Every structure is written in structure tokens, then in C-alpha cells.
Image (cartoon, rainbow, N blue to C red; front, side):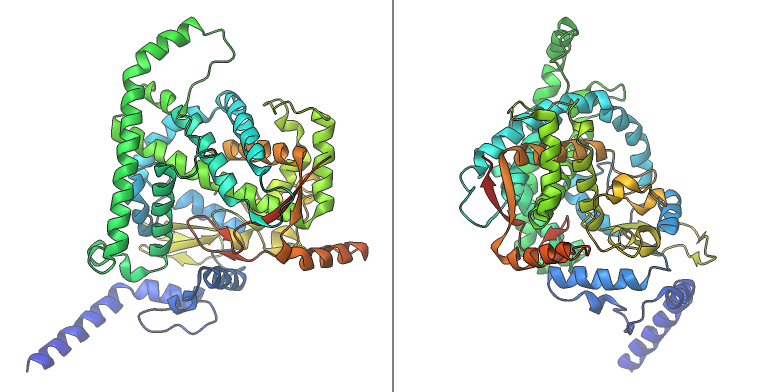
Length: 500
């Protein structure tokens, strides 16, 4: 009798759920990809496997959806301007970052965005180039130890460079991870990112209670790292807040000194909204995360591509020679706009290998797309930057090929066809910051070293040379894997050779 009652209740629950979700189910049939949709799990089974398998599955799904929601620039632009609320999945990142502007609900994001926007003014960004140049010089000095000694991963060098740069420009602290790579903050920061990336791939751990009980080791490790990071940031913020009056007086005395500049934290402390320590910690932590990983990933992919395309690398080197000659003077903010070809190369790399390959949003009320399809309240949006950047509709038949000149000789067919840092009202405020950091780092490195492909890529590079000799467009598609930011399967391995 008891089992009969349970069975009846289960059937009733299924019937009610089907009725409530009837619009979502109907929409799913319209937009579904070709593969078989299984009960309960849907298409989730397609994403089982390694981090690389996950990206392969996303690539396949995106190509099937070129005429649907996730991979069309026009529809993506409409949705990113209409649906501003982040999907529920981003709550996983709020455990560490709280309501920092990237992950905050709209009600919190909107007023904070107005406060943050002025801190990313061109004047403030120009003042940071001296930090980028100084930290880039440290990086190329450190790389001297591996130059000419075969294949190595440049990832740690670039992460340390971006971490040091972000800490100095955001908090006014010289962290010195390039000289002391075992510093606790970097280790704890990387630990949180690693655990978050893994949890995203494990929906059975999305529930906090289930995660705490059945994923105990990772949960406790994450909690320890978060506690260290929060304590560190709180101490820095309190110190800066207490010293802000003295610093303000000093800045008034030196207001005509062009060398003086303010960090993001100082600008936020001085803003009229009166942020508390929690708000300051949330916003500065988001800048640290976004500024460190996006710039490091973008620069790392660029160096790997340059190793495989020596003709492109030589053009950049010639451009740096025109600006810097044979001098070793640091780059200035006046130099960066002149590095036009380098900027095109970085953009083309970001097109093919965007650090954040997709965006997730939530539909809070029914939305009718330009195509006539109506997205119903409650569904989640998966907008594939990876697929939009490869859509032949916007990039032509050579969309899969690495051709930096497309950013010099061809205007964008649609503004949202290129959005490595998102698009619309919630696009990343730090886009120019990241571009300036990457241009400084890559140009400084190329002035001293020649980048060669890793030993495992030599065969592919040789084939590219052969294709170029036959007047064909060379093609080198890198293997990538899912992480907090998309990464190279071979961990950004290259070789360096000293320039004479």
C-alpha cells in the first residue's frame, strides 16, 4: 500500500512538473541539437569526459547552432542587451567573490557599475603602463634562465606577471610573485579557481549541502583558501582606508607631479558612495581574478600562435624596431597605440581562443527573438563566444584560419561578432586594461627573444611553412580545454631563443 501511494505521488509530481515546464519543453524541441536527448539528463551526457572533451563537445554543439541562439551575433547582441541577469550557476563563484560586479545580481551590479566605470578611464589606464613595463622587464629577465634550453611552459611566467601587475595597480602592493612564486596568496587563489572549474563540470555537486557532505575534501580545501584570501584582502583594505587621508594630503601636495597615480582600491575608497570593506573586497577581488587570468591566457595563446607563425612574429618585431629601435627603454602609454599590427595579432588570437568561451544568462520574462522564436521565462541562455567567433556568416570561409590582417583591412560585419570580453551593458570594463597589459608584455618579450614552437608542435609548424610556400592559408588549430578560463591542453609550451 505504501509503495502504491509513493508511486501515485511520483506520477502526480511528474505530471505537475511537465505542466509547469510545458513551454520550456516545447522550446527545447525547437532549439534542440541533433543528438539524442535522454530523460532527466537531456544532452548533459555529451559533456562527459576530460576538460578537452568538454570543449570539443561545445565546439560541435556551437556549429550545429549557427542558425539558432548561441552562435549568431545578431541574436546574441539582442539577448545580451535584454537579459542582464546572470544564470544561477554563477552563484558558485559568489562563494569567493561575493557580489563583485561580474557575478552580481542586476540590482547590485547596476549601481556598482556606475561607480566602477570612471576608474577605468583612459587617463588612469595610461598611468598603469609604467607598472606593466616594469613587471614585463622582470618577466623577460626571469625567462633568460630557460631561453635556448628547449621546450617549457610559459604559463607560470605570464600568470606571475599579470598577478604582480594587477596587485600593484589594484591594491598598490608589490606582491613579487615573479621572484617568489611560492607565495601563499597565489597558491590559494589558484586552488579556488581549480576547485571552481571542476565543480562546474560536476552538476551533482551544485547543491551546497551535497557538496559539503560528499565532496568534503574539496569543500574544506576551498574554505581554507577562501579564508586566507579574505583575511589578506581585508587587512590590505583596512590599511589603505586608514592611510587614505594621509595619501590624499600627499597627493594634493604633489598634484602637479605626473608620476603620481592612484590604484583602483584608492579610487573606490575615495568614491562618494562610501563603500564598506565588504564591497571593496568584492570589487577588488573580481579585478584580481579577471585581470590576472584573462590577460595571462590572452598573452599565452598569442605567444603559442607566434611560435607557429614566424612570419607574423617577424612583422611584429619589425614594428617594435620602428618604435623602439635597438634600445631597451620601457614601453610607455604613447607607444602602445602605435603597435597596430601587434594589436591585430592579439585580437585575432582572442577571436580564435577567447579566454571566456561562453556566457550564461537567465530569461526572467518571455523574450521574442528577431527570428520569431520566443524564449520562455525560466530558461537559461548559453551564448557561445567560441562559436560566434568562428561563424562563417561573420568571418567568411576562412573563419577557422589565423589571419591577423582581417582586423586591419576588414571592418566588423556586426559589433557583437567579436566579443572576447562579452558585449552589451554587462561587458567587461577591463577590456582596455587587459589589451594594454598584453601588448606591453608581448612586445617587451619579443624585443629580446624569438619565440619558437614547442618540440611537439614542430611538425605542425613545418606543415604551415609548406602551406605558406604553396600560397595557401596556413592553419594551426590548438587543442584547448575547459577551465575557469579556457586553457591550452599542452599548458602553453613554447621555446625561446635570444635575439642577437
